[in-house]
Length: 390
Image (cartoon, rainbow, N blue to C red; front, side, top):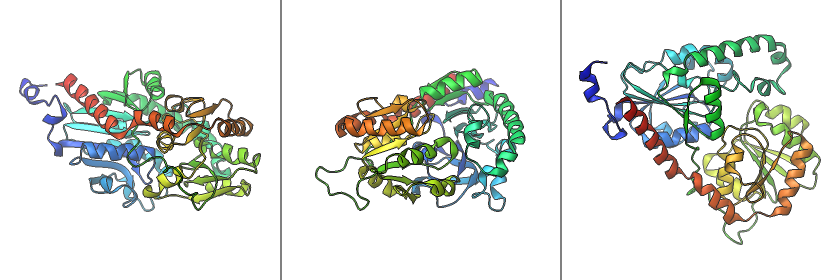
C-alpha cells in the first residue's frame, strides 16, 4: 500500500467517515436473534449502508428499516423473500458481486455467506460470526431431520452442495481482518474450521425492554404455560418439546414463532401444545413474563432467547450443549438436559418446576449481556481491527 494511503488510514471508529461504513447481513426476512444483533450494529453505525442478499421490507425494527439498503441480484428474483432458503446455491456468487468498493470499514453479520463479501484493498473487514455455515460444516443432518420426502430424495445432491459450500467458505475466510464470535463455542468453531482466532462478544439482550413482571401482577390471558420461542426449523428441535409435552398432559406449552416445520409439528402435537404463530417485537416481553419457564430444546451457537427470558425473571430448561452453557447457570437460573430425547427434556422441565428459581438471580445473570455492554465491546473490537491495519 502506498505511504500516502497509510497516513490517512483510520485507526479508530471516530476517524472513519460514517458514510464509508458498510454493514453486510445474510438475509433480512425475519426478526430473530441475528437481526437483533444487526439492530445494535445499526445503532453503532446509523449512517452506514446495509447490504443484504434478500430483504423483505417492513419485517425488521424501525432502526433497521431506516437504514440505506442495497439488496443483491438474488434478492430481486420473484418470491425471493419467501423462498430464500432455496436460493442458497446462488449466495456465494451473489455476496461476491455486492459492490462495496467505496467503503473503508466493512462489518459483516454472518451465519451463512456474508463474511465472503469482497472489500476493496486497504479496507478493514470485521466479521461478527454467529456461526460458520451450519449446513456446510457440522449441522447438515440437523437441517434434514424431519424435512419433506422430496428433500430426503435430494440428500446426495445436498451432501455434494454442502461440500462445495464448505470449500468456498474456507477459501474466503481470509477476507476477514478480525473475527468476533458470538460465544466461546463459536470462537472454537472459527478456530477449528478456519484456523483463525476470534474475540468473543456475546449478543445483546435489551434489559430495558425485557423486565420481570411486577410483584402480584395478575395472570395473563393464556393462563399457566411453559414457553418455546423461536423459528421452527429442524435444528432448533422444537419436535423434542412437542414430544416431551405429550408425556406431561398436566402442563401447557405455548410455541411462539413460525417456520417450515410448523405444519408438520402441528399435525403431531398433543392438545396441551398450542401454536401461537409469530409475535410482534413489542409483544415478546409479555410472552416471557407470563410463562412459568422457557424451554430451549436445540443446540444453539449462542442464543439471545434464554438471556431475554432470564431478564424477565424466568428460568430456562436448555439442552446442555452449545451457547446455552455460557448463558444459563445450571441449578440457579435453569437446568440442563444432556440427552436429546423427549424423556430427558420432560425430566428437566419437572426438575425446574421443583427448583423454583429466583427472578432476581435470573435478572442478575441476564444483565451481563445487556445491550450497552455489547455496543461498547463491539466498538472496542472494531477499534482493535482498525488499529492493527492502521
